[in-house]
Length: 252
Image (cartoon, rainbow, N blue to C red; front, side):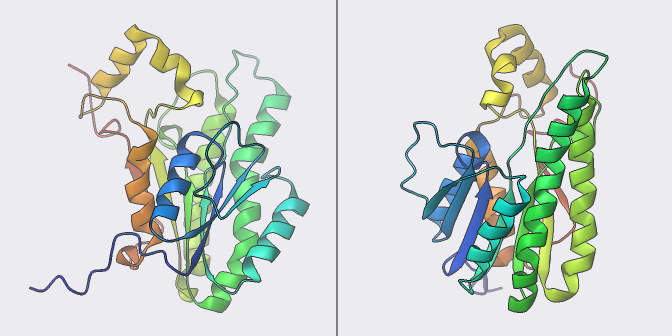
């Protein structure tokens, strides 16, 4: 059987890739990987602190959940006429013991759930016109499992998981695919306390079937796959990059 029909995993030439939260952590690695496969990458973030942004075609500073900013950026991106890949990666986690503060609830929902909705609404008309596009929403283990003292994060990521499935159904007829990528425990500023605590790090590592915690680069391959042509029949799916965390039962 010939493998000649399969293209390179990424094959993002002539595609415009928008990555929110591209200034650090998972977003920075995903953006770098997309650029490495030929995509024109626009990175969106509040700031780009001391990072080499040479891989970005544009580094755009703005609030990912501000409707006016999102609308203007999407209008500029879609005016290029290029097929678009959208990666909704930007997110916050604001844990707090009970009673959980209202301000943390609203801010978490704003950034983690409302922002992806705004970006999808902003780019999807152009995707429909082009009869193609890929939307990748970065969820979390918290979309599947309960974690303490952070109801807003769990609610936002569970909501994002279902938001993706709703748009997968709505946009499927136009050859626009929408999928979720759920990171496990990945080394970022968001998880720095867990990584710094050797006892907790060992406990978390034992929960994974691969016996280690993740690095931001572990997310790149699956995002490239979902952005490119080899995933053309995949939509509405949840892919967890967690070292087997969710599949595990009880740690030895």
